Amino acid sequence: MVNCMARKIALLFSGQGAQLVGMGKDLADQFPVAAGLFGQADEFLGRSLTSVTCSGPIEELTKTANCQPALFVHGLASLAVLRELVGEFPVTGAAGLSLGELTAHAAAGTFDFESGLQLVQKRADFMDEACAATIGGMAAMIGGLENEVRQLAADEDVDVANINAPGQIVISGELAKVETAVGVAKEHGIRRATMLNVAGAYHSRLMQSAYEKLGPVLLDVQMRLPQFPIVSNVTGEEVKTLPEIRQTLQDQVTSTVRWADCIQRLITLGCDTFIELGPGAVLAGLVKRTSKDVEVIAAGDVDSVRACAVAIKS
Image (cartoon, rainbow, N blue to C red; front, side, top):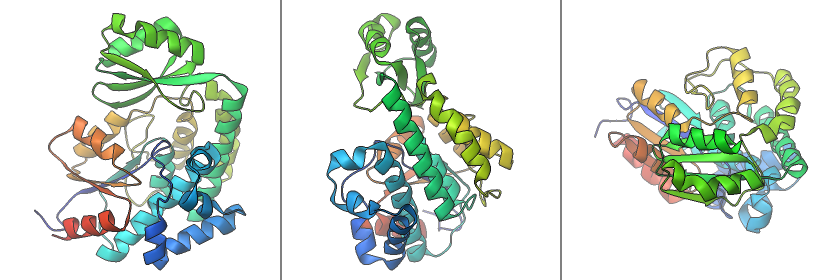
């Protein structure tokens, strides 16, 4: 193993669906820097996000308006604790799955914590409104090639929402059309198709109203260029200018999340150690499906963050 300074570290931040009741509670109990972020979040939002995050119930935490800000705060709290244990360490690049891309930007200093949290809350509210106004659904396509899934999506008039890893693609759109697509998936060479338990059709044309509302909000957010490269879900490349950051964060609401491309780009940038900052290890698993040649560490509670600190210092 190489030491922390010789590693080329990529930070990954979780998206909606990773949430767990109690996430961040042990971090906040043991580290004032984490408790401070949760406390600031409650103050900035004017409500107790912390009580929902720590105590649930899961049905309340899973609501988009709670889930997205909770994951944003938890990801940054996990990073803050890791930096307290390790000290400042160089970051070669970062990415986040959907909502996690905003967390990555906050980690890189594109916008401050309060601005980022308010942006995330508005994004979540807009997406909730879009879900309420449409009848949408999503489904996972396992064991199919991208061109096979794209053909299925075109045939059934739905969108490709996520390309998560080789053989793991998600479609999104009107519920009845997604259900039809699941029914005929095997005819398109897709091994297994499963409906997802989600509130609506994220990353599809059914999010158009959220896209339109988010644009003016992004223009109002004070931004600066990130301190390390952030790879966009939309392009699979680093964002280079402030207009590009605003445009990609807006486009992301209705566009395909090209997660596998994001990981490949970070590998191209030289990243050899991927740290997932969030509850669970969903992204770590996707990285392993994309490349067996990199080290992947999940860090989202006290034990795993401490283990991560030991690993990257060794």
